[in-house]
Image (cartoon, rainbow, N blue to C red; front, side, top):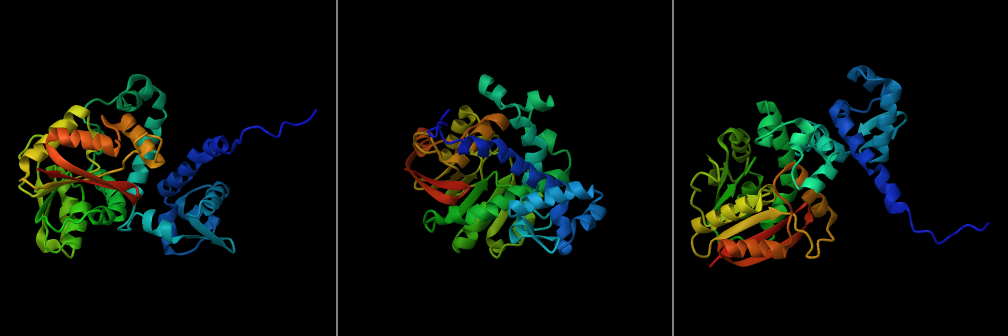
Length: 341
């Protein structure tokens, strides 16, 4: 019997069957302390197993998989961090993503197991996964250390992306920028370091500001940076001619987004601007993949979703903005600028 050589390519399916395993290898390496342990220098699997109280043969399998994923290098039986692992996967690196990786491992990994339920019901999966109601982060961040580590993971994202965002448009016309929901302040820091005439304020909930104070104090632009506490839904916004919302709009329901955008627009002077950092979907929603998967992540974890430029244009004009521009960036975030008439 002749073999059918015209069968469809199975590569996309086969790759996806094992893609989640790659993520879990990295998650496990961070969780078990592998990358931190290798900061001291190359080591064998037996040495690392003794140091980390792990099974040597099983650890060797994990280490070799990390080599295959280019997170580790191996020579003469010794393992070493690659530069990427040192920068992003060690817990004392200023560029670390470990907090977000741990959140992905301990929270999102479990919630994504219930994607089908989110699709059926159109709601997040906190109740189904953990039995939690109410504000999701108040349950997860039970300690200041947990909150700090998550924010540092988001800071690692910000260090990669915020310089691109503030360079996407000419912001030199603005004099005062307030970053709403600033977290560590990475976006307003990048803006003030890029534009020497700009003063900036990192605005966030009071309990989230300690890290913003630390980061703004370490910036070369620190004399033009301040920190202020408040709830951008409930409290008056500090005055500015440029507001920023970085990874904020995609968290909230359409009703809350409309409320926030109108509040921002009303607070701006004529000619004032709103800088938005979010990943934009293509107009037909068939890409890019990062935005598509992030949109599903928002469905699973929040009230929100990702949008196309046309959708942003619509909601921004509804809020009172007269001019909307968008730029796609070579990082996991894009940039939009809306100007009030």
